[in-house]
Length: 143
Length: 132
Image 1 (cartoon, rainbow over the protein chains, first blue to last red):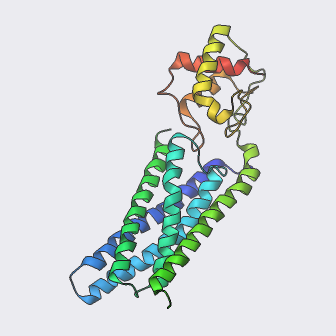
Image 2: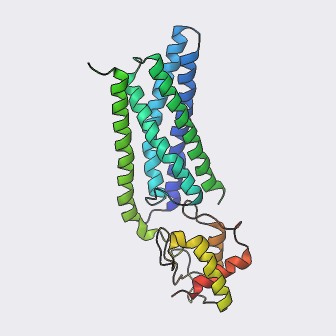
């Protein structure tokens, strides 16, 4: 298949920023909506924003992962920066899909303890996404 | 007793996440199969009509050491290709090989400009030129 490799790099670069940004945003909205001692309406709005951002973030990982596989010609590991990128990407991808599924299913019917566990995993996944983004940037900027 | 909704959702989340990861792993296989043939970015680079050939044996020996330390993990012990492309009988200039070693190939191969100086890169090039 003789497609210009830079084309996949552009698609991957464009598609990866959505799940990264949406995961960070979800962590922000969800945690603020959970702890904010304000009105019920403000909390509900923040949690609704978190609900949609985490689901969109989870859905956004599919084009990002697919374009990444095409860019690296199916490389799941690699070496140096690419390996570090993948060590963050795969747990982040799996975690984000799990979080999006859980949140979509549960909706507003969550317990305090269940949502705290969800938030803890969400922050962990947001950190993994940040790491994946950092090493992805190193691949581009350090070469 | 039915498990609470959150536990059911956790089960579903784990299943969907596992299937997604498995799907990505499985998707990598046909992608590798379809796209590996043109993985060889170095060989598809501009060519010269008669490839330049090897230098002194000492330089080649030194280059072989560097190759074993740094390159063999991807290009194979004898440079026949593995994760990276086959580097025997490269139809590109020495300068082009040196630039590829120093600058890398974006998204595919790291740069080695900090690891190897010009003389060491020349040794690597000499070793690659010695391969048939």
